[in-house]
Length: 210
Image 1: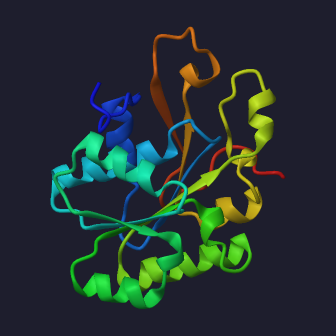
Image 2: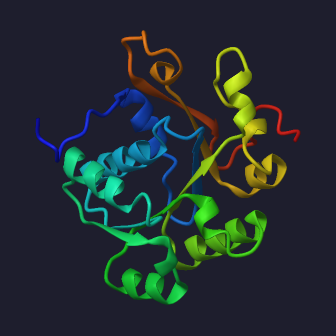
Image 3: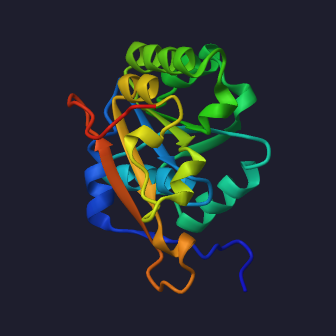
């Protein structure tokens, strides 16, 4: 077995194509689910899909614990555009400004909790300000509440996002993920479902109480 390859799930191309439309300069886009559903993989597939429309110079911030796993996924997917993986501790506006001058076109933060400079609300506001200032999209990976694991179909809704009222209002777009195989290992289908729960310039659908 080739150790440089991973057995990865799949995402329906139509779902990817619709999600890619939400990756708009100046916007902050959230990818949310429970751990191990496929948030990182989905973000990387979105980047790779974007590269089909032109060069995407990406700066991908992750934690020390996830750094090698992200790099392994990048190698397994095979990117046609440049992606640089950095530790989230390296994140700074000085670095972003320098990279923008060198052609940076996308930032990914994996995960939001690793970059909570102040409160979650203030952190998202800072990212939003940077996205608008440098006219680039920022993808933020974040968790949903553990209570999703105890509902019948395990599919998260907007109210399941931590700090739902605040986060739903501040994010421009929200992609909620679900993978049946994670909850039912007898299920042959290992696809990741992408639910665009909030679209750019539209009101979020669903209850955000909580």
